[in-house]
Length: 555
Image 1: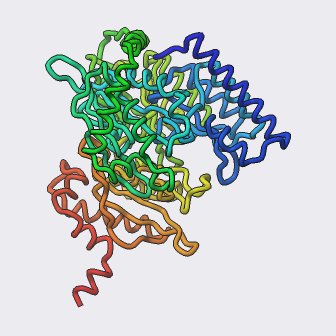
Image 2: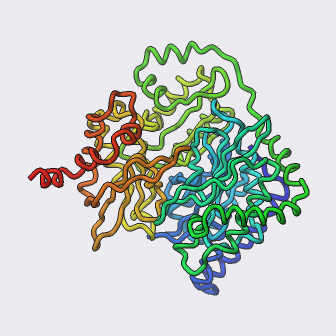
Image 3: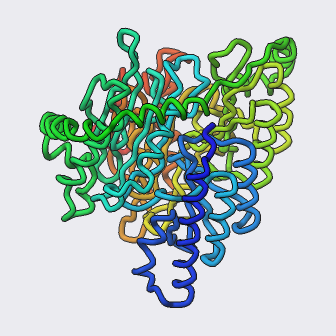
């Protein structure tokens, strides 16, 4: 894991001192809210529906126990005792007092964390595969590159006031767990003839105009990465629209100009930017890589795991859903679900954060990851430690065995917190989860991704959910549109809208009809929902979803 240098620490100290003065001026009335707004946004501070919200960056989703303990301390001291992990691998505090925010930022700096560029028209927190450095299918750990991008983009003088926000995601695996095709720039690590490079994707994004990114370069040598990305962002910064914020994202620029013209502009600009990079970026990358050396994996008997797996059905259920193959023999990747049935997706109490930090220290080589699916990952756990780890998770109510199942729902904060939301997300997620828990169906249903957004900004990624739910306001009444067939992986696709929306009380029954149709349609338990949908298309699901339409047609 990257450790801050003296330069990094001094930079943060100066930045936090500057913001403390700005907060003091705002409280004293020497800055209006309009004057304060761009200053607070540069430091990750939003004004939400009921209070300020501080969004803290967790670069490429990587933490250690000290950082997680600090997040817990902040939640307990300056918030209401919990934090909310987001689809951008950040954590949000929803209830800080303005006067306390500078102290929160100083506390974060003690462990090398900050809230810089988690908002504003800048390059946001660089995200990565949450299994990075551990996955069995990985070409290489992408986090050193993500750290290089973080250092390059932080306070970059050319990219502080761009047409709109800009998001970058990177994966080192052919199996995309970072949603790279729904980002402004997506990077997929490749190897050709022994050389490492990247497939570079531009123009992805969700929101009111969802688009899947297009390949602008099918193999960019690693040494050219920074100058090439600088060329992309520079071109968009110049030709991107500033007359309409809804058409300012790079996805619109790519759509209006076409990928071939964007590629030409980028390649022309790259000729210029390449000259300005002397190779120091590659020297920095080599130094950064030393911070990401693999832990010293241990060898131990697997008997405790095998005994628990065959002797404890509760442990076996958890192991079957929450463990993933690891690249090292005898190890597993552990996904800790923050989706206990009936709870708020992505929320963790201070006590739970401390417990997860301690588990990472005791069993996981002191590493944790935050996934874009709002769960917490222990990337390196030997199977001999899994029974003890599972027992401690159960005590903290963190042993829900539902990773990838119908109750493992992505949901934005919605109208319970967000000033932009037009409908609630959290209650819908809770009701769906508890309904299928009551029916005891979710393990029979199998792999299924439900994603819920409370407005068209799509922070819940509903467009790429197998089942997507979008909450809107219809004449003062919450109305929920349903999309089917979305895909967030390497075969990314925007879901198809099923038809008219549903009232809040109708959403869960509507989802139940979809699931009943799937169980009838699938060829067997091994055919996942998304596979059935791809085989059958929308028609049978639409008939199940709108039975009254089918009845009218029959008449």
